[in-house]
Amino acid sequence: MADLVGRKKEELIGQHQRILHPPNEHDGDFSSIFQKYTGENSGEILKTQIITKTGEIKDVNIRARVFEVSNKKIMHAVFRLNE
Image (cartoon, rainbow, N blue to C red; front, top):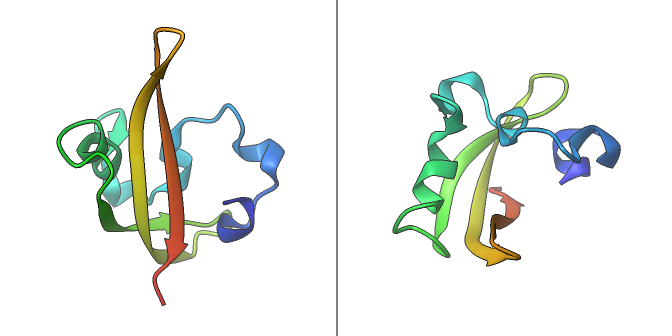
């Protein structure tokens, strides 16, 4: 992920997921794609865009799933560049 968005791993850890999505993808506190995965789209491959540190927009496919660990909801996502 760090390479895909042109950031160091340390710049991403602990950051809000909004840092990965262009402003037009934000819907309130979360990106619209994040909200889809917290609902019925969990596990599906969805197309969206991400933003790099320099502001470049890239088209990607994301597959994410929400699960619980120690009573905390966690999302695991895999991003692939849509070439």
